[in-house]
Length: 266
Image (cartoon, one colour):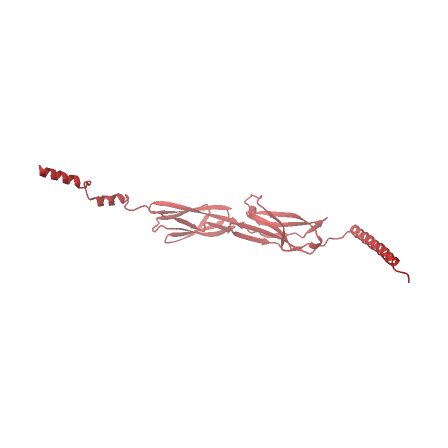
């Protein structure tokens, strides 16, 4: 009887493990993934992620990742592709004849069965073929300034500025132009004439800003002319001058007479 009680006591105090191995081996089996290792986490980068390219130009994009053993890399784009270069964990793609205003380029990398991607944006632009400021025309009391900016793209991102003697006298954004084709733009501005403006140089400037890329084009300077006097204006000016001289003479004679009358007799 005592031996039976001893066996029951030992069974109660001993830990109960499932059949087929120790507790340590089962804990190790539960922490392993079905494939024997955890799924990798990795990044994909496309450099540069933004690029402004002159119209019809080309660009290189580098697609890289942190995957130690990438299974493959691919590029998705509507732009025409050129050469391809590759190295450990990177592939460089050449894109040719960029003409679209905005193009999204997607790069995908597969690592341990998982595919991830990233996106870059390519923008095309066209510097003005010419910026021409016509000689100013004086009409009444205003100068007419007319500036021509030819073959620009995209027009809506340009700002046209007029400067007189280095100072801005007028500036206009062309954002109202929403077309995505090469275009010519003419800006007309009326500048009130002032005596101090005669002979001052005036220039026209076209400025394009695309996410930090600044493109500047300027016209040759022109000079504000001195107003031409018509015969009627000359006659009016002569009459005014003669009237002023006559008034000065009369006032001077009255002052002299008053001064002499105040002097004591000799």
